[in-house]
Structures are given as structure tokens and as C-alpha cells.
Image 1 (cartoon, each protein chain N blue to C red):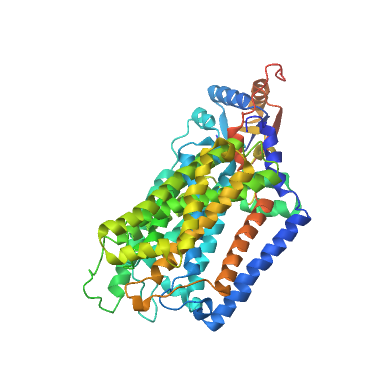
Image 2: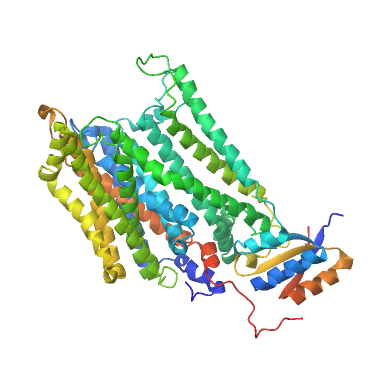
Length: 444
Length: 170
């Protein structure tokens, strides 16, 4: 970013907002059709025919939808890590990727929040979980991890959205100044008439710092709360105190991988080499190595706890995980989440964009499989052998999962075309400020 | 005496802007607004800004949010007509999580509202003296001054490096 001049920042960053070409719009249409198929064709079919059409029958009643819920919530975590925690640590490399990572968080949490509703047999009464006086005299149980989850996810979404919007306001003012017609009016509306006065910056700066500080505990708390959905149940494979840190590490791992999956192509397509430097991507890869080690540690300690506990049910659950019906998924998961990121120890690999992208995708696949192995694998082998049974997603599960990925990439594509994908104001703060050259005399 | 007019100096360089601000401050002029396309803490230092009240509002919002969600949980538990035996009537320990989420939500919402309102937003008309270039790569100072002072202020701004000086009224 050092070679970028202050007056060039707007022009350079706003390259993404130029009208999209044919490839862009074809991609948008295809993704829209994919999302439409998942959410407006297959989901209504499931509502009409019941959850049995998605392959849900005892003992596995939490299947692909809950896997997707945990996966997408996890994806969001890296966004908050990059935008909030690294902001507090004054990590300068975050500047060029924070906006996209935050957008990724919001889209992922939005998509995640749909899955518990899709998972309901009667999704139209999902509002019963909201506490309000009602004629049924029923109240949600505030001791339940499901209510914790509802509160945690809704708080996380609200906080992330407001933090993202706060960062966008000065950029909306820049867009307002650089556009005309209808777009100027839209950007002007969202800029809240920002003028960049000292008074506005004074309160804005303090609020942005506080919002970052408030979002920081959410990175830890949200996935801890999600893990309690499982850990508070007495099912072997779920009931473990290691779950909160294990889930948080996994969430950050998958989120960083998604950052690589999205930003490597973005950097290549829009020639953002001067803004998203290789050093930035390398630092993301190094953090992914750390997370891979944390996740790998959990993979080793979990079976150890099962063995050391002496509990026969825990032991058979982990034995089943390693050599049973789902064992191929378990070993693929171990490779993708621990072995593949270990290649980032080699400098040549972590500084090659194509390899960063490929390993990012492998980690994403591995993290999806991890949630599948934990959620479905544990339910498939309960206490009674009589109740054992295997589950595999059918076309309904796969269709809605496919729709969720289409919706995520669709939202991201629309985001980079209509909003600044890189925080203009923050990039301006990072480049050398405009100082009067010695050879340029004063007008007076 | 309250002013209703003044001059806006437009600068291309940060050091010129800071120099002009210091000179205006020393000369005792009333600086209405300083416009910058990025956050410059040096401007706040020169203007001698007090710590933002957003901190206090965020704290109060967080406390209200935490108390509200716990209050809701208490109300819900006492309103629930089915007896749940073996469980405490008001289980405070699990409600730590409920309280935490409410605290964060209350603090975030109040912080957002606070910076918007204290920043004088939203407004239908732009701030006096604002130029769209201030949201791109230019810096500005709006100095409140009457007719007799304007020539001195204009000279001061130009000598400090302002590329352009305009009249503004509000």
C-alpha cells in the first residue's frame, strides 16, 4: 500500500464499482437461480411434505441443516476477528481486507440464521421463540441453550451489521461525492449526510473503537454458545467441556479459509495487488496454521478424554468416528483441516495465490465435514445399539445446502459491485498523508 | 456574539491544515468546523476536544440492556404458569449469558445512536461550508468571522497554504 498516493485511493478502490461485464452478470443470474431453487422450490416442497422428505428420522434428527447452521456461523467469525480484534491490536495489514471480511460475516450469519427455521417442521411459528406475553401463557425457557443461541446469534448479527455500517458511513459520503443521479441519492441517504467535520470524527472515532471492543467478546461467545447446543445434551460425542474453545478455533479456521477463498480471486480480478498485498495474505495463512494446530490439538484430545474417562459409550462413539460408517469423512476432515494448512509452513506455498485459494477451499470442505462428523456421527450411535442408525443427506438437504452457498456468493458478488469492497477511509489513513512538497511554494 | 457567516479555507495538504488551525487558534478566531476525509487525531488535539460523551452513553446503554434482558427473564419465569419442579425459580447462573448478550446489544445500539446524534446527523441540508471534495482528498476549515475580520482571516488562511478561500453563510 506504500506506493499508493493519497489522491489515488478513491479511484483505485472504486474500480470494483464500475459496471459489471457479461461474465459478472451471468454469474449473478446463475447464483440467483441456484438460491431460488434452494429456498423457493425445494424448501416449500419440504414444508408441504414434512421433514421426513429431508431424510430426518430417528436417531439422527439433527442433520445437514444444523451442520450448515454451525458452518455458516463459523464462517462469520473470521470477519469479526479481522475487523474488530485486529483493529484493537492495531494490526495494519487488516485494513485492506476488513470490509470484505465484515461483509462475509454478515452474509454468513444471515444465511446461518435461516437454517434453524428451515429445520423446523412448522417454520411459520418460529416467532414462538421470541419472549412476549401471549394468549398461550407460554414463555421460552431462559435456561435453555436454544434461547442462549437465539440471543447470541441475533446480538451477533446486529452488532456486526452496525459495526459494518459505521465503517461504511464515511465511504458512503465519498461515493455520494463521486456519483451522480439515482446512485448519488441512494449513497447520500445511507451516508446520513456525513460531512467529515471534526465533531463527527470525534464521536465516530470513539464509537468505532467501542464497537470493536464490544464485538471482540462476541467472537468468543457466539460459537461457545452454539457449542452448548450440543455440549449441554448428554449424547456421547456432544457432552464435553472442550466444545467451546474447540468450536471457536474451528470457526476462526473456517472463516480465515473463506477469506482466502473470496479475496484471492477478488485481488486477481480487480488487480488489487497494490492494496491487498501478498504480505496480508501471508499473514492470514500464518493465522490459519495457528488455527489448524488448535483444531488438531482438539482432534487428539477428544479421543483421549473419551479413553481416559473410562466411559464405554464415549469410547465406542470415538471408535465409530475413526473406523465406522463415517470414518472416510473423519480422515478427509483431518487431512483438510490439519495436514493441508500445514503446507503453509512453506513460504513458497503461502505466497502463491493459487495455492492459498486451493488450500482455503480444502479447509472449508474439511470444516463442513467436521461439523457433519460431530453432529450426525454422534447421533447415529447413541446409548442403545437397538436405536443406532445412519444418516446421509438426500437431495432435499443437498439442494438447500447448495442454495445457501449460491446465496452467499450472490450476496458477495452484489456487495463488491455496489459497495466499496475495501474501506476507503481506512486505506487513506494507512497511505502517506499529503504533505506540501518542499519545492512547491506557498501561494502568498 | 453569534456569527452567521464566515470563510472556508480549502487545503490540499495536511501540514498546511494543521498549521492554519494552530494560527487561527492562537489568533482567537472561532473555528466552526474542520473538514477532513479521514480521522485526524491531531485536529482534536489542537481544538482541545474533551473526551466524547459516546463513552458514557455506551456504558449506560450496556447497563440498561443487561438489566432489561434479565428483567425479561425474571418476568417470563414468574409468569410461566407450569410448575417446573426441581429447578430454581430464578436461576441466576444461566442468566449470566442472557445478561451478557443484553449488555452487548444495549451498548452497541446506544453507541450507534450516540455517534449519529452527537455528530449532528442525519440532516436534510449539508453542513455550512461543506464541499464534496472534503469527502475525497481535500481538507477544510470553516472560520466564523464578520465583515471586518474577513480580510485578516482570508490572509491568514492563504498564508497557511489554503488553495482557495470561500465565503459561507448559515
